[in-house]
Image: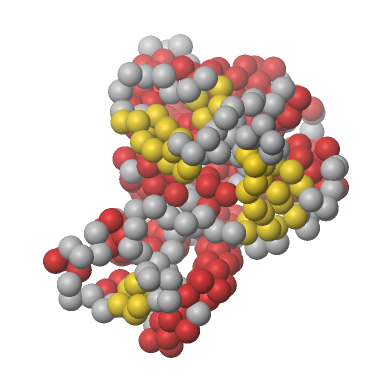
Length: 447
């Protein structure tokens, strides 16, 4: 999906994807080995360390302002009010407890162990894929505490801004631990930046590719357990808050249901994150950890928070086309990925015999029919349709609930261009022929 599938391409013959030789479109990297056998990824980064640090600060401040903007216009601006509204130690305790809980659930003796990218020791890294069970137990625990009266969802919602600040603090703490006490394993590559030895750059972008704390892969942990499960827990909290306030509406329920379908689909197919470009090619530093602690849980759930603050009641008949739009988007996403993954696993499967392909000089084949003969990135199109569908119940009184899908569209558009530049270098004239036969990148007859 848009939040975890930016690196998937339409080049399909093998289940083992080749890693892209660049990162973020502006950094280049290569792997080499030192005399002691340790792997080192050499990165030539064009990022300015001070600019990246400023981005990290603005990420949290802008998120607080966006959440504050969802409130009634009669409310005072939070940044002009007391410090207590954006910081309290109870919120820090909540974020820490959630993090510790997810770390404990990571050790659940259920779920499969899946192999991912190749480690520096020549062996594939293994990952515990039990995120679905961790999510279900988290929901059960949160719901039980609420039903027993131990926890009041409204009290959590009232602390939403201080929770963002707490998420920033905890992500900073975790990043400092990774930076000051680097975890050395034979499988994880060290990151060296060719053009600078600036410690700030290594702190923000990261100095290790795949650090681990015991069996916990830190990158996998923050992406899945903190980011996606945190997003689902915020949605659940908003739902229970609406019940407490007797303000539950069809529009709010629709958005939450759409979100949960999206998140559950990801958790059921948790292994899909292991092949994304962010996961395979990016080191983990403060900017990635910060994004998973605050941007995914709080920004992605912004439409639900908006409806909680500014209810928008829609008629049942209006909900029908919105559901259809989401359903169409989900089917496009799901079926196109099924076709892509199935063809990659076994291109000789009789189910794909009717699909047309172009032979690449690399020996691979490019699909030019089926879903990938419609547009070059149909899974991204499905993502975009789903995300806009879950914003429509918010109405059109503000642009705020539409910011997450707009950001996602921009990211997917950028990633699609990045992938196509890489494919052009790799496949040459075969890729040019594919683009000629399938001229539209994301939206048929439009873009």
